[in-house]
Length: 128
Ligand SMILES: O=c1ccn([C@H]2C[C@H](O)[C@@H](CO)O2)c(=O)[nH]1
Ligand SMILES: [Zn+2]
Figure 1: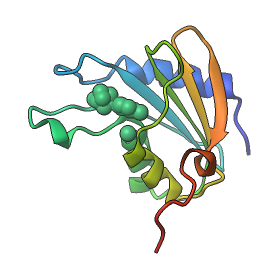
Figure 2: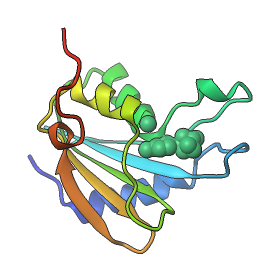
Figure 3: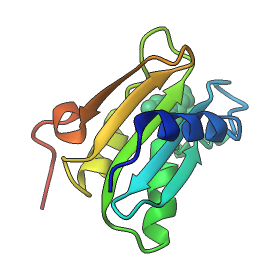
């Protein structure tokens, strides 16, 4: 089952408001759609030990995985950037674990977005 990009982006925008970002002040929201139509949202969660920060994308993904979901259709990522919010390398690798077919809607606050696949974002991902 596929979900409309606009709806997923709207949910990512709402999740973004929950971002815990006392250090960077840079709020990111994500919304992940499972293949059977469930949606898990996430925001970035920072820490005084900066490297422990979890991105919005991985927050959403880990919520879904920990609820038993393994198959995903798409993820929307939203932040206040001049262009479009593109997932970091760590999130690309973690998303690729669950399939290069996953669609990524990269969006900004102006309502602009572009859809690519995880395979396009991370060709040659590490796999065991
Ligand atoms: O795709 C991205 C890129 C960055 N961040 C977060 C990590 C950190 O909290 C802040 C600045 O890097 O943005 C995300 O959540 N997702
Ligand atoms: Zn990331």
